[in-house]
Image (cartoon, rainbow, N blue to C red; front, side, top):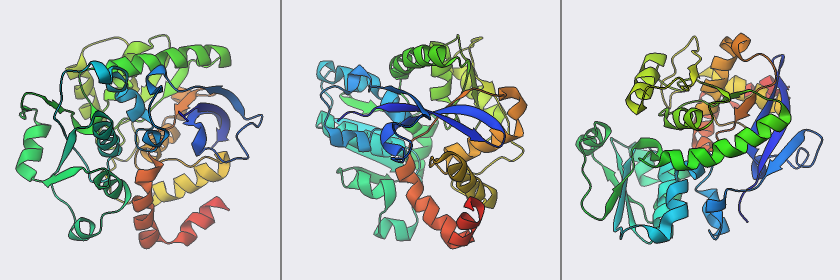
Length: 327
């Protein structure tokens, strides 16, 4: 079955807000309760896709790839898909599934990989390799791709890090239409989405200017995110960037984020992603006066990618930290 999306009333740290989340990620006790304010169906471009695809193409990646899911049968002949990024990337897994749906090869480039993970893949890496992903560990090629110097051969598609491509706005417009209808019904005027590359938050703000959009650089700083927005195009509809007191390094472990995710789950009943959601929530707590009450949080999905990171956290800080903060 295609996914549905739930809008759930939550409270945390004195703030009242609504979380939009894929319904299957909700505990049974929340689904159908008074806290579930609205349920919306999957976008039209999901029609006809195998149910198994939605375990791989989920969260904002579903909307990023919406153009290709909608127009798959109309595309010129494609032989290969290329992309690059981190070793447990959700976009990597989503593109590996897209390649299978299209019947083409998927090639993914890493700058490096830990020897243990290369020998014993786990998490999103294992799932993507199970979908016949061709993995290249090539620092020079990775840097060429990141600098925009890689030119795919005729008949090949190239997706930038995070699954970004020239048609991202297609899916973001679809999501914006849903948000416009639901936020009007629920009387919400502000929406928060943490930024990885920043492309999703930018295009969503462009497609839905009647809402006030907020974001934060999950890793890196506000200046980098401003530069990303400037490259994408100057507009008065750009998201407002909320900054945290700490600049988090991608993939590194932070005790305060490990504790925060447990506190959030205990208060809301919802599990949040350890990479992007936690950095986003730290910025929200630092800048809570800008959001106030009654706003919308767009859940990142991506919980599959958190599995291996959670294991690293437990080894570093211990399960007792999780239990203590949730008590």
